[in-house]
Image (spheres, rainbow, N blue to C red):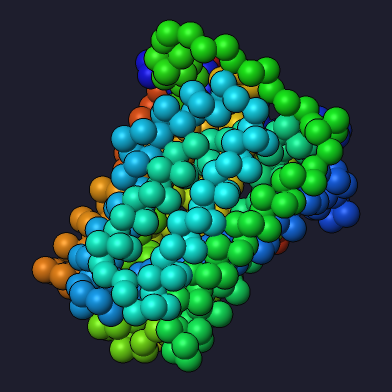
Length: 457
């Protein structure tokens, strides 16, 4: 990524969610409140959203139950991190091939297949747990199997959104997807925590198996005549390298993916950290773990909903989001009590989703339709696969240096990385950091602005 490319990136027009109206000054107008859910006008997307509300709630239930089951069986936070790694490792090693598959085959068909397989894996874990026969290696093997399914499911799902709603509604649909995911994260952990306390972990897995079947049904009911499918790419040599070259040729995508990598590896390991804080620091048990996860999701839901009101996407905004996120998470590491910790979790969730939604939108809107599957596979590989490395690492830090140190480090490392990236972009793009104190909508502590250009002599 040469300096000239970065300079061009920061001086170009911001990515817009759609062909929206502009003000008299040329600035894109903020969407009206009635347009905050505009993508739901599309019938196929409504079916998709309904299925995702059910599916994501159940998925969050399984995640909480899985982490607590491993902790109960082993008594080790590191084992929880290894379980997370087993689920994400396939994406790290095979994620790019999943993008090639997503570009070669109809994405609707791929989603039906992957969701059916997810349901079978969840059902197997439910049976083993309910029969009292589950062992740690069972959980690890099923987590790895689910990761292999996600290798194909995630890029196909990401690219399928544009086929349902088209380019004009894509930004709004991505924001709504994040809202739905976090709505599940708000309800699912609380339900799972209560169910673990009352009847054990197994029923959370059973519910997730049924939810996967419901997704298959909703996708099957979509009207194929109303889809806008991307061209299916014929099998050919070098398609993987073609996708990588494309990303390198798009600095705005490449810098975004780099930011995502730092946040994913160090900052997005909250399942490991919250398990440690709920069992060791605050001693609140599985119900407390569910509450902490729900508070994180509450903030994330707010961030996702606000993102439906953001009309433009700028790389310099992404840098600011990561810095603020890192400072909040580092502060949470040394929160003196549960009230302050819980409040900070809401802010962490909010900033996480503002960043993730904006990064996802920028990458998708800047990608060619014929390469979108491969580009999103790289995005997902970096976002999720990096957690395969970060999960065990944060678990080890938590066990040997303490959970508070692990939480603080998980925030400070991405924040420092964002500062360095911001300085590089500021230097090459002729921008500077400006500190402001503003009231009203859109208030922020600092932002990056163009430097004044002086005439020579």
